[in-house]
Image (tube, rainbow, N blue to C red):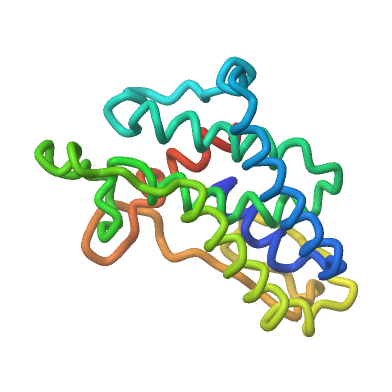
Length: 193
């Protein structure tokens, strides 16, 4: 099971107090921008060990992503933190040198790198607002006392009953499947999986 897929499923099906989520979002935004006022904030950041990291990320982007990740990690409520890691994961891919319209891992053209300057904070906070909205509109009304069972099985026994089953298509690297490992490798490494 892809740990990123597991994280996303847990985030979607965990019941949260939406007022606490929105308050945490506002606090996170304040914290990120307040950190920028500290001239030494780069020194306390932890950049993950990613193979060929300089090939896939600019130093500017790495520092911004590391700051967001550090601030998310400092959120006390693990369930809210889990939800906030979903848009962070999306932001990692969008802010990398990866061609974002591909399902496989391809780097943008060398001549395009000169002009590639993503607004990392804006990308993340727009995605965070979208994720909170989608969660509030589509998932929260349906979640009661959800119990999540992560299984790596091709089938379940007749004695097991589920209201929702989320499955993944076959893993592979062809026109009919998605190269999940390639698609989610940066996110998994940034999240420590």
